[in-house]
Image (cartoon, rainbow, N blue to C red):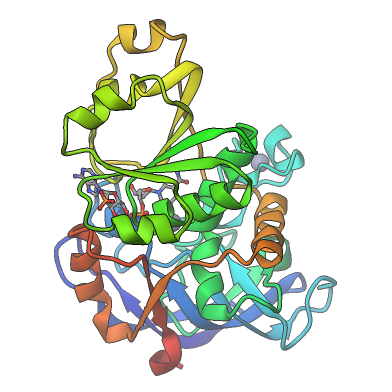
Length: 348
Ligand code: NAP
Ligand code: ZN
Ligand code: ZN
C-alpha cells in the first residue's frame, strides 16, 4: 500500500479538505498512475452533497483523470511506464455479464460497474477518485490518451466527452441531423463540439443569451434563450435529437414539443428529484425519452481517437486543489467556462 495526498469530502455540507488516502499495491494486472489533472464534473457535486444517495465519507471525488503510468504489474500488456493515460467513471465491472461482454461495462448488471469513487473495489475497500496524487487501476479500465491531446484537456473527455459522444453515436448523428443541446456547461459545450464534428446542425438552448458568442464559436448554428417563451413556439418540431445536460429539473413537456416526429430527447443530466412527463407529450409526435450513461471502455477509446482526429478538446479553466470549493460554487452558479480541471501538482 502507498499513501498519497488527496482532497476529500467529509460530509455533505463541509468544504472538501486536504487529507491522505491509501492506494493498493500494484497487482499483476494493475497500472499505477501519477495523476496530473482531474476534471470537476457536476456529478462530483451531486455525489458529495448526498443528492444521489448514500456516500461513504471521507470520499475523494474525481472521475476525469489524466496522468502518466509510473508502474505496471507483471501481467500488464497494454501499458508501459511513461504512457499517457486516462481513467473515467468506473474502474472495474464483472466482465462476465452480457453487457460487459458487449463492451458496455457501464451497464454491468452483475451487480454493476465499480465507480471510480464512492464504490467498493474488489478488495472490499471504498474506491477513491482523482482529486489525488496517484491511483492504481486494472489495465482493462485504463485509456490511452492520444499524443495530440494535452493531458489537462484530455481529463474532461473521460466523463463529459464520452457521456455526450455515446448518445450522439447511438442515435446516429451525422450530416442532416438536427441536434439541440440544453445547457452550455461541461457536458453541453462538448456535446456541441462533438455533434458539429459528426456533421450535425446544432442549436444551443441556454437559460440566457450570455454565452451566445461562445456557443456560436464552438460551432452551433443557432442559440436561443429558454427564459424566452417565444423560443418554444418558434422551435416547435425542429429537432431529431435533443441532449439534455441540465443538472436541475426542467419542464420536459416544453422541450419534448421541440422534437420532430419520432424524435428523441436523451436525458444526461441527473437532477436529485424526479421530473414529470405528461403522456401526451410522448404520444403526440411518437416522441421518445431515453437516458444514457457515460460509455464503455472501447467506445471511450474510440471517442478519444475521434477527438484527436477532429481536433475536439474542451475549453478548460485549470485550478489548484485549494480552489476546489470555490469551483464547486461557480459550477452551481452556471459560471464555468466550460470545465474546471484541477492541476494536482500541489498534491504530488
Ligand atoms: P454543468 O457544467 O454544471 O452544466 C450544466 C448546465 O446546465 C449549466 O451550465 C447551465 O447551462 C444549465 N443549468 C444549470 N442549472 C439550470 C437550471 N436550474 N435550469 C436550466 N438550466 C440549468 O454540469 P455538467 O458537469 O455538464 O453535468 C450536467 C449534468 O449531467 C449533471 O446532472 C451531471 O451529474 C450529469 N452527468 C451525467 C452523466 C451521464 O452519464 N448521464 C455523466 C456526467 C454528468 P446554461 O447556463 O447554458 O443554461
Ligand atoms: Zn462525470
Ligand atoms: Zn458485467
